[in-house]
Length: 620
Picture (cartoon, rainbow, N blue to C red):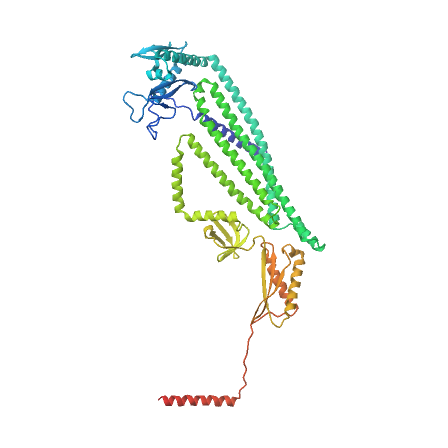
């Protein structure tokens, strides 16, 4: 037992470690790519070169892009360039604004590395290069200044300032940014931030342990409820297939005391509904525990996500990925959390509707039992459909977050779907007809049906095929698309159509009285009473023929009981007819007998021969 608990603990620990690793990889996997050289236009792979790329705003003759901090990607200022209408073939001497913004960012990245190594605070100064105002960085590490930004006329025109005023403004912004970088990378602040990150990490581990114990407790309770739920399912199936001994005793008591049959049926129905109600109560409890387990799972992921993002926002070396961690990973978490919750709520609603459908007070007992047996198949199909729809929606939204054109994927999927449907039309027909069979409840597993010239017990039923087991033990598989006419022999109730031909020598009224006595005796015996839904009905004489009188009896039985009852009833009728000298009908034979004298016969034969000889001579 200890070894089993240790192995289970080890598996859960490995599972949680994998979740942590996936969460960290998801957060860190969307970090910005650092370029060491001037990048090419990011819109080179764009479908339409005439449209501005993402992050670029076009205002007539100008295009605007953001210049962000290399530390945490906060907005510093905006740069402006003349509009480039075709980025595949830009005009000579022009530079797309996104390329210019990326170039400034990469120079700031170099400034960040130099500020990290500098002993004194770097200075951002305004200088002139080729009659243009530039902002450059000076420090004690390099003898040559690092050019950061060139202030252009479109920049000044867009911001509504002179070149000198705009250069001074940007110089103050960049100087503040350099000082902030130097302060954050100082040993004192850096050690303080790293200490805070370690404290957050310890808090994450402790919080994960608490969540793990809570989830473990819920799983243990869920396991106990699952075992009880399986017991109730077995009990419900047993009550649906064969009534319990207590119900048989109730039937005997109802016969002995002449108690109305409706009261006995109501008692049986209440007992069955009580079993079903307890089953659905346990199912709802299982759903609640499952939902809480799901929430703990997402709480675990959310705690680690928030913790990692906070650590990234505090540690200077990780700040450059902080804004990326708040973009796509957070959107993915929100989307899939929403999808998982909606799927769980949808499944709970299906269970609730199934509960109401099964325990409807106006349905008869046999119908309630049948619905209870097939509700699992119907609810399972609906749950699978809901899961498929929302997971497909989540995949499409995920692709959209990664800027993958979902319209082309949907169009391609539609083409592939049409091709598959054309190539497998019979499969589509099978699936559609299988859905109709389930929805209309034409038959279910456990019914005895006739399909064309094939008949047998329905052993398996799914959306594609129906499998029957015939009397010889053969398993017959029929595609659902081939099922057109179905004869269900066990739907709600069954019937024995008993008919027998008796001879004309018998008294018809006496024959009918004997059949009523046999029927009453069979109906009054407890062994057969629970298999008969009502007293057998002796219809009377249905036909008169040369073989005798055709007498018919209808026996209404419980589903699947008509064969047992029919065999027993035929045996009793045979014994009763023998005891009361009742003759079975047989074909009528008519014999014609003529006594002829031998001499007369000989004379007639001789005359016939003579006539034939004379006829022969005349012919010649």
